[in-house]
Amino acid sequence: MSAFHAYDIRAIYGEGIDEVLAYRAGRAFGDHMGAKRVLGGHDARTHSASLYRAFSAGVRSTGAQVAGVGLVSTPCLHYLQLTRGYDAGFMTTASHNPPRYHGFKLYDGVGGSVSYAKGLSAIEAAVAADDTPLPEDLPEPQLDSGSRDEALDDYVRFACTPLLDADQALSSVRGTKVVIDASNGSAGELVRRACALLDLDAEFLNAEPDGSFPAHVPNPLEEASQRAVCEGIREHGAELGCILDGDGDRVIFVDDRAEVVSSSFAGALIARELLNESAGGAIVYDLISSRVFAEEIEQAGGVPVKSKVGYTHLYDQMAAHDALYGNEASGHVYFRVDDTLTTESSIFALAVLMRLLRRSGASLGELVAPLRQRYIQRGEHNVTLRDDQPVAEVLERVRTTFADAEQEELDGISVSYDRFWFNVRPSNTEPLLRLRLEAVDEASAAEGTERVLAAIEGK
Image 1: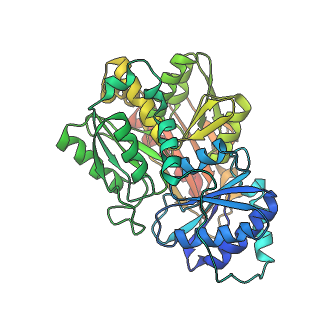
Image 2: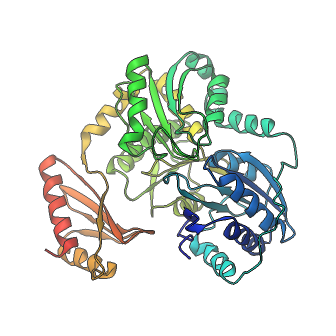
C-alpha cells in the first residue's frame, strides 16, 4: 500500500488515504499493540480531524480506551502520552509535507516509533486483509483526566523548564525580542503560551492553524519558508527567530543577523550547553550532519554517537547510550529529561538556546560564526534514478569508484577523504539517491560533487 512508509503512514488525501483506511489502520494498530489506553492528537491539515476520529474509532473497536487531546503538536502529544502513562499513542499528521498529504505517526508504550521494521509492516498487512466498513458514528475522543487547557499548560511548563529551573535565567530573558513562524501548523497556540510564560517580546507569524498553509509550505528547510522570519528579525531587531513545521516537531533557527542557522550548528550549541551541566554525556547525531557537530561534542567533553537517518534510529541510539540529546539535520531535536522520559521538543530547544545566549553573553550570530567558517557545506542533492538504474548497482559503482577512501555503510555509503567527505543513501519514499557533501574549501567541494555525481550517473 502506497500510504505505508518506513516511519509512518502518509499519502495524498483521497489518493491513498481516507477515513476508511484510517479506521482500518486504527483497528490494526489497536490489535497489534494490545494496548488498554491510547492517546491521540491531530495537526491542522484540512482532513486531519476527520481522519483522527476515524482512527480513534478503529482503535476503540479493539477494546482499548481512547483519549484525545485534539489539535496539538507532535512533541506535546508524545510528552503527554509518556507522562500520563498511556500504552500507545498516535498523531494524525503529515508533518512537513505539502497540504494535500495526510497521515499518522504511531508510538509504542515507551514512546518509540512504530516503524515499518517494528510493526508497521504487520499493520499494513492487517489493513489489506480488513474489509470492515466505516461506522457512521465517529465521536471526538476526550481526555480521561483534566481539561485540554491543563494538558497544554503542563506541556508548556515542561518545555520551558531550561529557563524556569535555572537560577536567574527566567529574569534574564524577559522582554527578549524573538520572531516565531508557526507555519499555520498545530504549534501556534503552544508557542504563544510558552512566550507568555517566559514573558518574551514575541512577534508571531502564521500562528493561526490553517491546513491550506497559505503563507508557505510547512517545511522550515525550504528557503521560501525562511524568508518571513528573516525579514521579521531585520524589521524588529530581534535577537533570534525560528520556523516550525506543520506539526511542530522540526525547528530551524535564525540568528540576529537574519541568517539561517544549520541544524548541525544550532544542535552543536544546544549540546554544548547541556554538556555544561552533564559532563561526559553521549550526544546522538545523524550521519548527514556536518562534521562540525561531532568535533564540537568532543571538544566539549561529550561522546558523539553517529546514527542512521530517521527518528526511530536516533531514538533507539539515545536509549542504547543513555544520551543527553539527539539532533537530526532535518531540524528534529530530542532530549533526555530524566530516567523515564526522552522526548522531542522544539520549544525546549528554544529555551536551552536562549539560556546559552544569556550565559555566554554572546549573540547567536557570534556563536555560530566560527562553526560556519570551518568547512564548506553543500545542500542535499537529490538524484532521480532511471528505471534501468537499480539502487544496488549505483551504490556499488560509488563504492568501487572511491575504493581508495575510508568507507562506512551505516546508512547508504559514507566516503571520507582528507579534503572532502560525503554520504549517498537511497530515499525511503522515492526512486532517488540523496547526496550530502562537505569539504575544506570551495574547490574541494566542487571537485568532490562533480566526481560523486559522475559515479552515480555512470560517467
